[in-house]
Structures are given as structure tokens and as C-alpha cells.
Image 1 (cartoon, protein in one colour):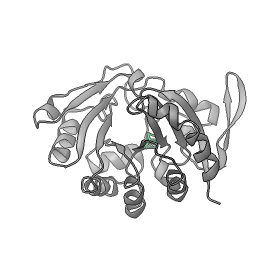
Image 2 (cartoon, helix red, strand yellow):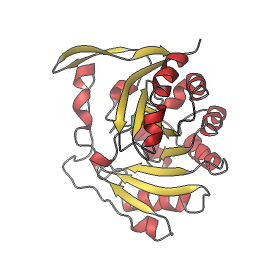
Image 3 (spheres, protein in one colour):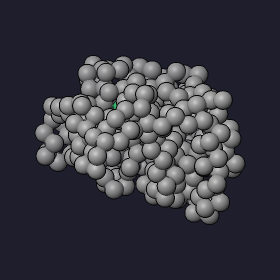
Length: 259
Ligand code: SF4
């Protein structure tokens, strides 16, 4: 029996991919993005979180059979609404074996992987090949800035992006806009240059900054310490993408709910 740990299952989501979807949030992430608004996704282990409604445990162990069963019971409704299942997190690929076991048990459900791309190359390929669509986050092209703000090198992420371009699965590149950090013209231009010739890319989404990003940290005994001015408007500049012929869109906070 393959067991995974999830911290939320959200039904009837309309901003995590096409149609009406169920979004499954898997616990555990190798990155520590300074702007992350889902800190309960950092570690794999269940945690106690203090909320205005009281203390609750975030993180639930579940077998692949159990999760696939829940999702399969929704298959008809999801298909009727041109939707499916989105796996998000955390980083869903940290539970690659579990994810494979769940996806392989799904009965004709559209599968979307929402990933940071920070994963073992073999796991990445294995899971992407089981998906219908991928949301691939790109944060910072400068290696030193990426390391500073996420705690990890972007080399393996970019290698997985290049791998993704050869797998024949459509994908959207998503860029979280953090004022003065990821939204600089230099960073957006570097991202546009990096992805302009990749095959399989069906669009670019610039994601609005979540000003409530720090809300969950105190409840987990953590501190949110933005080094940027959260009140500063983001530079939602499509020009670098349009200039290289890419189809890019800015999504407001209500238009993206996942990672
Ligand atoms: S923003 Fe996404 S990739 Fe970054 S730490 Fe949070 S869950 Fe992980």
C-alpha cells in the first residue's frame, strides 16, 4: 500500500486549471520561497496549526487507493464540467511514488500537475507523462537570486523545463509576481528569452502577488519576513513575452488558487 500525506482537498475549484476541478494539496516541498503563502506545505509531516477557529492538524496520511476512490467518485461531475483533478502543494513531486499510484488508479479523469519543477528528473518525467496539462512555475532566472529567495539552485528546475518541452504534454509557465524581486523587467525578459523557443508551451501566466501571503506563518510558529515592500504595486509587464511572440496573461489573485 502506498501512502501519501495531503493537507487539503478542495472541490469545485475554478482557478486551478480548465473547467471545474478538485485540487489536491500534497505536503512537502524542497523550496522555501520567501513569498510562499502555503507554509503548511513545506514539510511532509502533519503539523498543528493555530487558527482563529482553534487548533487543527494540517496533514493527513491517506492511501493511494483511498484518494483515488474519492476522486473517481467525482469523475462524472468533473468530466461534465470539462474539468478534472489538479495536484498541487507544496511540491507534489516530493511524493512521486504516491502520485504515480494515485494517477494510475484514476478512471479517465483529466490530470493537471502544478509544479515548481524542483524534482528528480526521472520522477518528473514519469509523472508528467501521466498528465494532460502542466503548470510549471518559473520564479527567478538569476541563479544567485533564485538560491537566495527559494533556498535552491534553479539549474535542476530549468533542466526539467527543457525535459518537459520534449515530452509532448502541453504546459503553461507561471510566474509569481513579487514586487521588486521576480517582477523586474530583467527577470521577466530573461524568462521570456528562456522559454520563447520551447515546444509544447501553450501560454504564460503572470500571477498577482498575494498580500496575505504571511497569514498562516504565526499559526505554525513561523515568521514571515518579506524583504520587499508588500504595498508596492507589481510590475505585471507582458511586454517581454509579447515581444517574443508568446501568449501571456496576467491573473488576479482570485484567478489562481494553487501554489
Ligand atoms: S511557493 Fe510553491 S514551490 Fe515555493 S515553497 Fe511554496 S509550495 Fe514550495
